[in-house]
Image: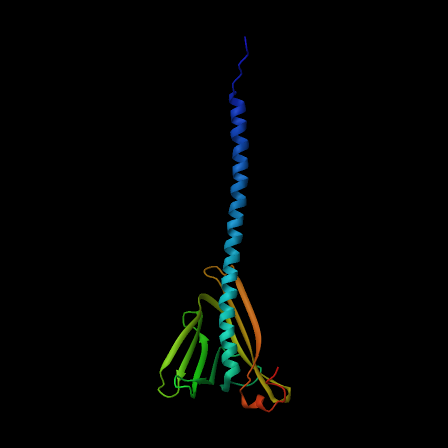
Length: 187
């Protein structure tokens, strides 16, 4: 007769134990991958939001012809400037732009005040991101050149686990002090 052999209780227990260890290791790897993915997505969101804000600030500062600002080299928490823009009729008009941190500390607000009617438009940037630092520093350079150092640092809420900081120098191309510096407009 043939000897039939089944699975013993010890063999079954060892198989379950080895399978559990393999499943635990696989779940830890997946969990770690998900955390890394979430962290990367949060950082990418911060970079994207601050880059959009910085592009808008750069466009406004370069078009500014008058900037209300304190002495050179001292950081300020807001920036107020007057810029030229093309109105709906195709003519040139001016407006005042103000950048400042939102009252709740979440985001930066860009206020556009039309000089003719005094009506204001407000546009939030970096909404939902905690602003850890937002500073504008006027820099007077050689040859009567003028520009601004913009420094912004944001973090994801609630525990600041993903922070992103950007510093940029932006020349004020339309400002009267820069119009006399030869070659400044082309740089």
